[in-house]
Image 1 (cartoon, one colour):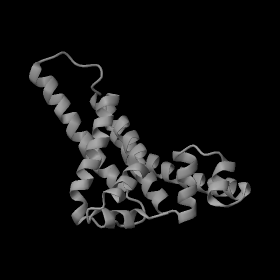
Image 2 (cartoon, rainbow, N blue to C red):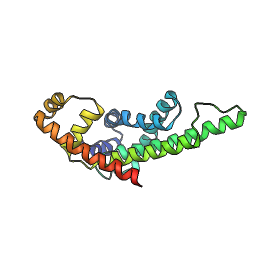
Image 3 (cartoon, rainbow, N blue to C red):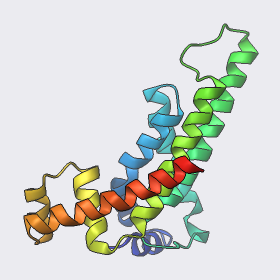
Image 4 (cartoon, rainbow, N blue to C red):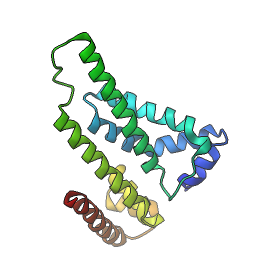
Length: 182
């Protein structure tokens, strides 16, 4: 499996296939962040796509610090969503329309930002896992693999999958609890 760092290095030199691999590996998580922050599915889909267009343009100067590009994509996504929310509000204010129930209230936006920050902390924590644990987490959490399927894909036992996922969940629970305490 090629690392995100290698893919970014190749993509920064124009390798479109490397960027496609980054896209395929991160689009689901980026979309979920956008869906938390934006009022409609269409807005979230547009923001997720815009995130990768922006990332493609910024590749030349980017050097990956760590093993996962997801925190970088998440940061870009949050900025894209913030810009989209501002544009939606300007549009609403400009046309003098009544409050659109789909546009989140300031309290909803604040909670969405908190949720996005938590997602960013979790993504950083996942990025800090060793390679096998990270692959296991992605297979089970992001792709919905059952323990047996993940064990077969990674060439480890069912018990190893169960034990490693238990340890990963405990570690991530600690990250979530730290975020809720601050």
